[in-house]
Image 1 (cartoon, rainbow, N blue to C red):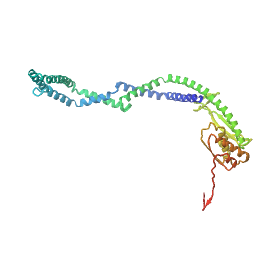
Image 2: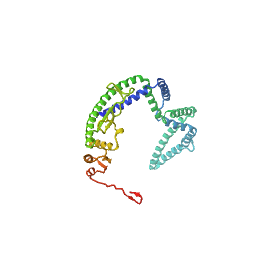
Image 3: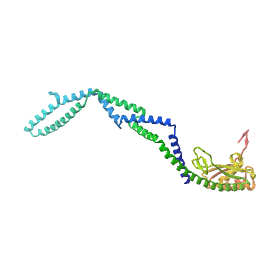
Image 4: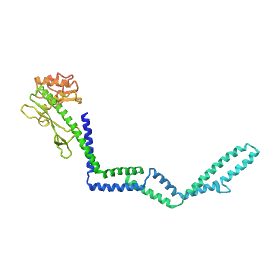
Length: 374
């Protein structure tokens, strides 16, 4: 839980540092960005764009481009329905209704057909009214087409700069306003970030020091346990030490015990392992001083001490018995057997005292045949 809290504080500190660095950029660069954003916002605001506007404009543009043809169609339809006195549908329909009225005075059964035609006449009159309104609204004013084409050109220009749709252009404008507001209030925002950075740094120091204390306590137990196990593995006087150090960072570090140190994602500690195989020799970095056989036994000691918490499922030890015999071999075998309770352990060995601890044995033999080795 402590490390989780520390990681959260560490991540937030990095975010705040990045934001502060961004706001502290060269003032002339900030001024140029403010000018650019102001221009972009003004250009988008002046356009007064509305979502869905482009589709409506393009539809209206198609209508205006075919205006003469549409007017001709509307007039022809009106002639066929009403204006052509000799052949108009309206004339034929009224005559038919009059004839059926005369027929119904002789035969009442004709009245039903007459009533149906009266309904048709009513619908026709409604349609004629709509058609007349449609014709009146078809204007031949060329300025309307020019205005729509200019508007569409403006939208295309803005789409090229700020997004492939009116919605994207509006989003760009809103984001630009947010960014501009942030730049104009940079000093105020920086002041807030500095306070947050100080608080986050204090939280990190408290959590990081707790992590270090827990690690140092664990390291002492680890050193004692591994050193004791090395003695059992025929390495008397061998020492294993865990070394802690901080890395100084005067620029972006946090203050710990009067020093400016660099924090890492999992704490303040840089941890190393020192090792000495012989009494009287000072412990030195493990990767510089341990031989192959010593490394094998040291790894066995570490794995033995951490067997219950080590997530690695399979461990392979290759000739861990090099230079070992007697009681030490028996001790190595017992440690491998203990590891085998929680892991799969594979071991290449020449000692019967080690092999006798295994559950399963594989014999590897070498022989020459016809000039080849098998």
